[in-house]
Amino acid sequence: MLAHQRVQERVLREFTLLPVRFGTVAKGTAPEKDIQKLLDKRKGEFEGLLTEMEGQVELGLKALWRDEKLLFDEILAENPRLRKLRDALAAKPAQASHSDRSRLGEMIKEALELKKDGEAASIITPLRRLARSCVENPVILDRMIANVAFLVDKAEEVEFDQAVATLDEERGERITFRYVGPVAPYNFVNIVVNWQEL
Image (cartoon, rainbow, N blue to C red; front, side, top):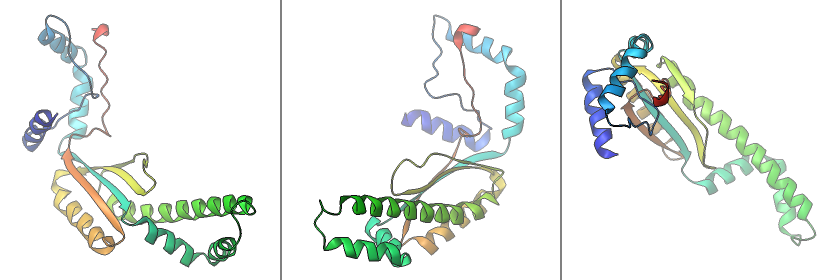
């Protein structure tokens, strides 16, 4: 995998790269011929995608809460009703207050989702202005706020990097950012190869 990644990084420095779905492998006794058939058959499609992606790179950003306890404390500080219910339940036996505890959990979950949505929008909006396109991928962890891929002109990459650095400076105590790229435009090109159709 690392060798494949290094080759891609090197190619991306000089050329536009179209990614093919992960796990696509040319099989058979003459894979070179199969690849040539594929290129001949789908030449127009690939040329169109190359033109569309020319000078573009994908940059990925994941934003995660740094400290979940701090986040919980923020939610309680911002919601007196939740804090009051939590304090009232603290003195009651768990079995006697089961339904109220479940309700509190649901209320906290709703408050967390609202907070997450607001934070995600405040992170994504200024970056979206610098990108040609943006794909919001699924948030896969409880502490994850955003998982976004941006298609950016290579000429705008430094400005985009600076915008991410500014977000990190402003929010680094509360949020950690995982920023990757440039990579091939995986979230913006979906080439599926079915070798049996050649």
